[in-house]
Image 1 (cartoon, helix red, strand yellow):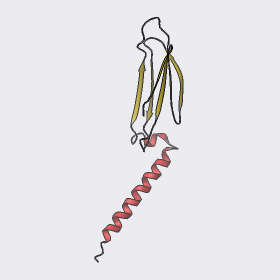
Image 2 (cartoon, rainbow, N blue to C red):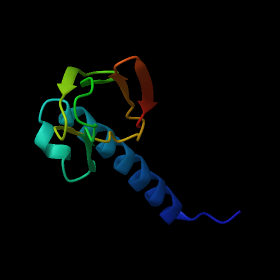
Image 3 (cartoon, one colour):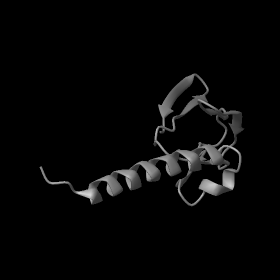
Image 4 (tube, rainbow, N blue to C red):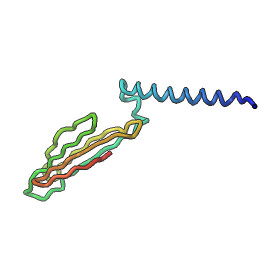
Length: 109
């Protein structure tokens, strides 16, 4: 059997790379700006394109970590928020809409 020393070096480099990634992810919890270049930013914008003299639109958005509260929008008002996708891309946002007697909810991420 032939011995290839470079495979051990490659394995060591791969393990070092994975450990460094894990350490960078842990640091990001203490310094949010560290990961801004690694995690894409997403912005959601809702514009209330309501007819005149109708009920107000209520919007309630939240994620597993953040509750943005209930926003009440008049005609042509907007509500926007931004967030960053996490490293594992399992960011989840949910918004519920209430307009008079009509309601609906959506999963965004």
